[in-house]
Image (spheres, rainbow, N blue to C red):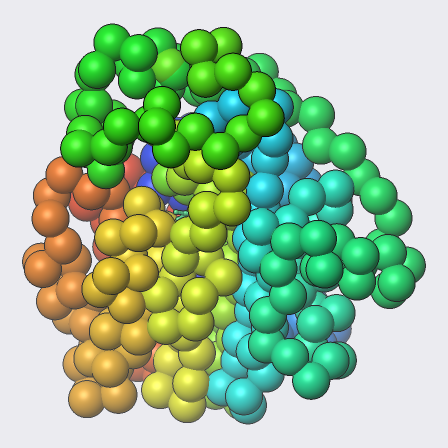
Length: 299
Ligand code: GLY
């Protein structure tokens, strides 16, 4: 059976950044060639995307509404029942490597301060993320649009009083979307599947908000029938359990493209959605927006 790797850089990332997704797919394929597991290969791909700086994960994570704080999520899963996630973490360079550490605990997910303290216990050093120019510009744009009541880029906030819910320590008047996640799906030469995801969240967002990326069945799922990752507005992906819904299509015998198409068709057009899926029949990616994707397949 051919080994396949699919990677993506997020539903609202730019197509010209697809070289980063290709590089991540290549790194994962090299890991498989070196005899590493599908799970290790998926982690290697997401680790590279987190370090790229252009994508909304790890170094490229977007700012929360206060324009200061960043909180990140990451997860991994394979068809042997390995499952681990971290949510709402900060001061960790590579959230996916912290998620991998959670594998060797009795738990599936660690969140917030406890997860960060656990990182230090496992020897993962403190890393202060510096928001890049994209994160700062995006934050300025979002806060401007919020202040003007222009919700065209963020329909999820149209009915909300964001000033009332402001839960940061700073003044809301200091502050005006991104919905990217990075992800990888791997099928190794033995037909085993693994997936990994990582994100800086979906701007604009309140403190403590968790999206789909660390939630099993929502942003990711892997089992004996295949592997699936999703990207887009986390709340909408979570409501529809997108990854699990696509997986159920694969388990029912649909090819990856048909399984993705069925879920995409039920997704409101206003919300960005991208899906990668790989099954024993091959791989597919579908999106209702442009989506930078990397792909490698080798005997
Ligand atoms: N899909 C990324 C997020 O909503 O957090």
